[in-house]
Amino acid sequence: MDKMKMESMSLKKLNIERLEELFPNCITEGKDTEGNVTKKVNFDALRQMFSEDIEHLIRKANIPVTAVLGHSAINVSDFATLQIGDIIRLDKKVDEELDIFVGDIRKFTALPGTAEKNFAVRVTTVIREEQT
Image (cartoon, rainbow, N blue to C red):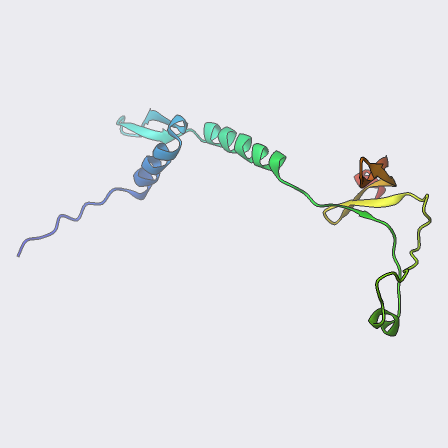
């Protein structure tokens, strides 16, 4: 019966080869403890490359921005009978500043208005982290 030769590539070497295929500029040559030339990962170059890619992706990401016109509370029976044209009174006056949320975080106040044919807001205050 033939015996199978039981040699396998080290996982470290295999991973470095895969990284080299994907990111050739992030692999350098060095010497191991026995003086043999080996390939090594340049982690600084890899981090730099990823940080630039991540920054680019973050800059292109869309984030939800919400202008809150006001709040109201109505009872269930009024809610059940709401119809087109009904008016719900809010707790804000027409000329009061609105809260602007970026995601779930209140970041600005603004005055309501229009831009071309769309509703819009004009930012009046930037809310700093220490103000929340």
